[in-house]
Length: 169
Image (cartoon, rainbow, N blue to C red; front, side, top):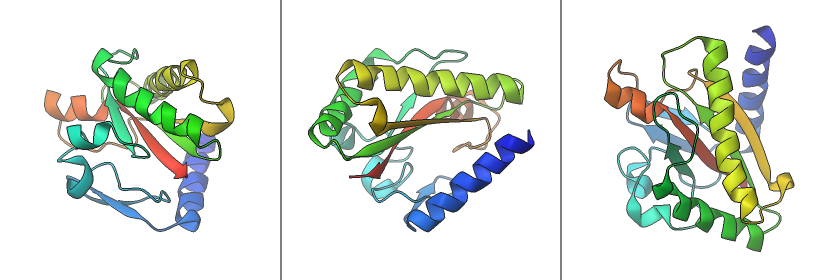
């Protein structure tokens, strides 16, 4: 538990040192070291980061949602992931961070494992298209990084996701 907390603190500190781009979720703003638009930014992703206009552009941070207790990529997300893969293949110095997340239900350990499986599922789709392992960093936040703070199915469905965040272009 202490190691995970330390890892989160180190990653947060590193991202703040790497840049100071901020993005807003429905509940407020979060600091992140990425240089592209953020996950909840109204201007580029719509209310929760799922604007159809931007899902097929790269490099764009994306969120891919999952069903309850599921970690297989939804068929409707494949085209968007493939667009990101094509960009990464064409730009070998570009890197993405895949952040697996879960809703608040379940133990901390279970949700960390589930978030990891979700990040790995997106990574597998990228790798199947030819993206290099060196371009992908995976992390699981489990239930520790929600974007919706409610306790209903709508909030839970928003938190069951993998965020694809460009670290460099």
